[in-house]
Amino acid sequence: MADTYWLKQTKEKPLFEDILWSRPENKRQAGKLLIAGGNQHGFAAPATAYGAAQKAGIGSARVSLPDKLQKTLSKLMPEAEFAPSTLSGSFSKKALAQLLDCAQWADGVLLAGDFGRNSETAILLDNFLDKHEGQVTVAQDGLDYFLGPNSPLIERADTLAVINLGKLQKLAKNNRSATPVLHSMMLAELVEILHDWTTGNPGGIITRQADNFIVASGGQISTTPALRESNWQIELAAYASVWWSQQPQKPFEAISTAIYCYVSS
Image: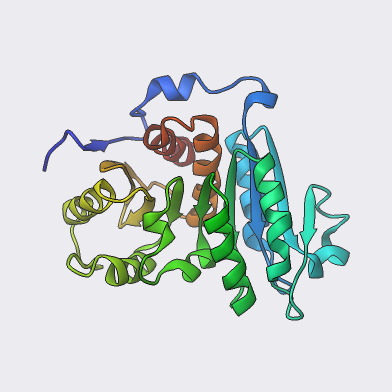
């Protein structure tokens, strides 16, 4: 295994101390994040992501939710904005213009999850990734809409998938069938696959294999011991979105540093 592309980080020593110590001190310069997600029956994912983004040091954050939640949450979440929803309470296709407008304000977008299963929401998210050109991080059930062939999680630039091994296996099966991802793989085997995968594709990946978080971006790999049990996918997606928005020219370094701060917090 070539150490030139696989870097190992510990809780005691970050890989990129310059990134850690050069982050903006002024809140106005600490990035703007749009968090989207939720449906009429659940909004835990965007709420958790908002709390994690604040803890990670975002300058300003907005939350976009389906308007079926407006009566319930308008007073509880004053930072929330509400977009058109379907009769069943998920984002509708009509929410696209509002989401794109909010995304133009933001330095990064986090599709946090709890979208539910809805055909209109599927069209909305697909159109959003197609039309918006900035940073997008996708987590939880937002990933489910993009696990098929020719996935934008792989082929779209400025895209980060925070994904567990089960969904990564499906993504690989539909997009990299010659190199399947198996739960039984050793860490070094998965690192080799993700190195090969991201060398030829612009999308980045955070996943967890046993006791290690793995970042794969532009063919570079970092691993960090996963020293905590938690709702890691949503929380880590928020941390990664914050750090990446603050260091847009250094995605691999920023996302690896985000993991260091997450496991050390």
